[in-house]
Image 1: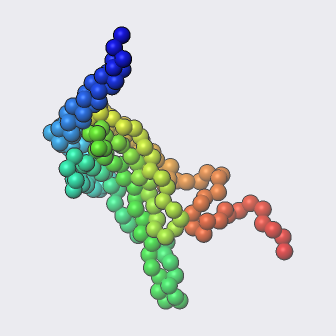
Image 2: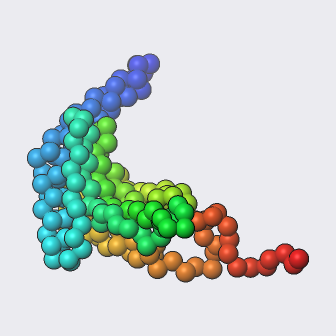
Length: 177
């Protein structure tokens, strides 16, 4: 038995992975990016969400397509003095398709966030896909999951104390004077 057989098998696997990376990168540019943009634009128009589809491709072979719900005044304001308040801006969340270094696609949900009012929640990773695995029905499912996460964030009323604002848990037992 050849002592190099395991090593040579690993070399072959490595070469195959490199070839697939090039195919994935090509598929992102030629097929997946247009599919994402068209599907997200159609859903955005039909839903009336008025989201924004953002493409970032400042680096070759590392692209991003984002469906963002945008930003707005949160309704919360920091008191500067008796007469002046500074509105805190709310990022309303986004669904992100990010091309990774190996051409695969990471799908993430960025949660809403109010600047200056607690720490942003860590994005939720849906999955990493090969470009050919992402089809229109998958994009729709990702949008459904995204909307459910946004609804859960907006309608938060769980019994667990929130770690936002002054980083205090409100309610519960208070020490007696």
